[in-house]
Image 1 (cartoon, protein in one colour):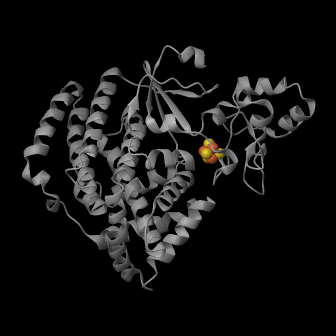
Image 2: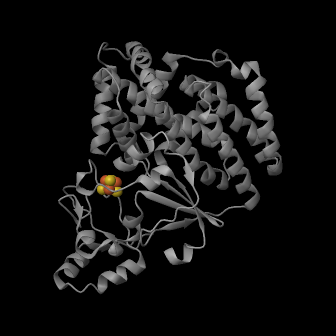
Length: 405
Ligand code: SF4
């Protein structure tokens, strides 16, 4: 697989290059409650393992799935939810046979490789604590390199169906979106709103099929950002802390029961609940705690560590914008999902900060890592959240501003 891809260019952010799995020192495990599929070539290798007792243990821990697209996978331990090949926090296949015996799923995680034409873009799932740290805590984490070549064996590469002219438009839009996110003349929230105005207007060109007009539109929008006083005026966009808190809190509560499973995320949710209820007993009073802790703790942390949420948003755009638009959705559809994920993360952090009487890197990494692990191995949760926004008629820039500010 690697040989066939050596002629390609890889696009790799700095945080991927920095990543090193920390194995048994990890606070989570990659494999808990995930289905670990085994690709055909790796499965055949397992049939030819020389050590008879290890081969037997391997074969015993593999199951055939009739109802799944992944025909063969590892059996998960019923008590721990971990892969049955995990031993004292270490993968016994890696420690006994070496990394060349890992399945594509295990070799690749937490990286995601998407091949689009002659470029393979490497990103990663923030469900891994170490990759979350590498992305969120390094100010240069989203610097890109197109000379790096991954050397890990047996990487899984997903081919993305794409149309060249749309892909060019997406690339231009992404680059400009990173520029907006980097422009610290505006507050983080203001930049997020500016992105909404930009995506909303860019959709006109997408809908009319005028992809070649997008570079000119980007130039016009750059001029607007410099000269349009309404766009530059943060106060021109609506704010309502009570609406923001109640909408996000209710959305979380409505879905929590059906989705919550990860232990670390459960700890974060419990901390959020204790924090938000700290000074009040009634739902309508929680908003005061929310408002106070937002300005006292969250904004303080974000001002001191501006790269943390900037990196989160830039990575979100890098990782998900292309797939969303190539699948036929609009830029603004993508934007709504991104804002809702950001707003829900912010909600949790404010409650956690209330309980902890402050916010630090550890709280933020733990929340974003465990939130991702809990919700994002399918799109189910965010699709439900998005559908609710649409059903409520809140899929407009004004409402997005109410949830951002
Ligand atoms: S979650 Fe990340 S750091 Fe932890 S064991 Fe898996 S790959 Fe390594």
